[in-house]
Length: 529
Image 1 (cartoon, rainbow, N blue to C red):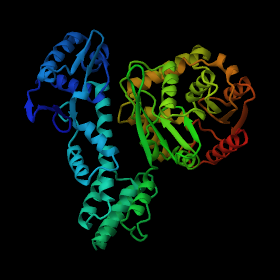
Image 2: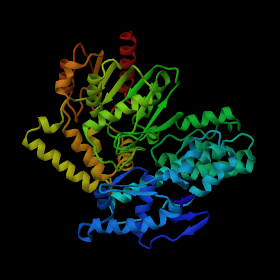
Image 3: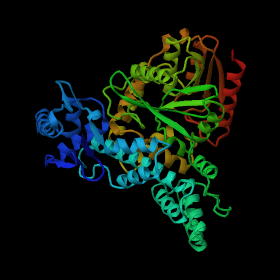
Image 4: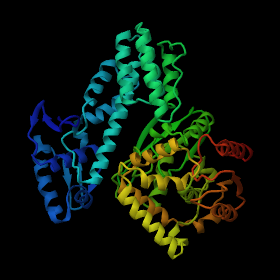
């Protein structure tokens, strides 16, 4: 079996013996990309990622693949597969440390020794010798993979810090490691302070609590109550602390017809009635729970429903490098996730452009959608409705997106974010700016905006059969309420509710958020049957 070491410097070995890799950094980066993306890649996309036009990208790709074949196709097995259009590494014939880490983090029965071994493996930087500073799209992909490795490492250290029967010294060690990776996680903070108190180091615990209190306040977050008695180290207490950090959810992956890997998750008791949310701009199944914006709403919905969400192609935990981002793929991806969740009939929630996707799905599958809930939605993108001045403005925004999305300076994203939430607080705005940057690449952000602009489900509205509730913020700057009213007027027997808010995306703490939850529950209860 050939093994791929992706943590630290990229290494390939056979039977424990290292195999010589090409000296070219781009060729090693290409190998890391093909292995970790784990789906077929179009040749033209690989050329865009790794080579500039003057460099004869197709010739350079052929050269790199010839070097990698000599390494991967050892022992007479074809592991590097390529045709005229696509390239793929068959990872079923490889032992890849990143995939082993992911499997360990998802395995609740993994032995402590396995957790420790995988944490130590992941303490090294992923593909540390494969950085390509002048290749923005590849750099964005690599940064996303490294963030994912950090999140997996956090899961391992959290489980080790909270394991029953752990010695006080080991509990303190793993709590500190958890905290280093997640400095504003309330669960990590509480556990680290409690671990020092368990060792009898009260002065160290007080000093750490002061430092953490300052860290939380500087980040604009509410600091945990470190003065409360230290929680007992038991499975029950551990579950409570973990729940404070994020609701329990099981993340699954499903592949589409074009081999895009979609991440989806259910949260809330499986015995609760289902509620499916169509993907919208933007999402991340794990980072969503850190959100000061929509996390309170999601948590509330998960108390009543088995709340099913997914990351749309091109963002979050789903594949970023995808052959197509279009309205048709948005709808087909929702179809695939609903099938993967095993749902026969369910209420469907669509927010912003997710409303259009939900309308199309409901029209195609009338027997599967029991209720349709649309918030901040529209039936036609701006390319179908904008005048010449509006078109120039929208196209300028896409140019700015391409240029400014990935920059550390948040000035562009700040301007962009305020159109979604004009009433947002500064700390919430900072979070949303950073969330957008971490959730997709600059190129994909532009592809999303272009796909949204071409949406058109106006002829589908009259075909919706499910009981429908249309909700819209009265002061929405991004999608005016008049568009929501027109949406409701053209869907047979739809109900309309206006909320007292100026925000296109509701803030978790604003009164309109509570009203949204109330009208959704009341609608589903009243129209059940």
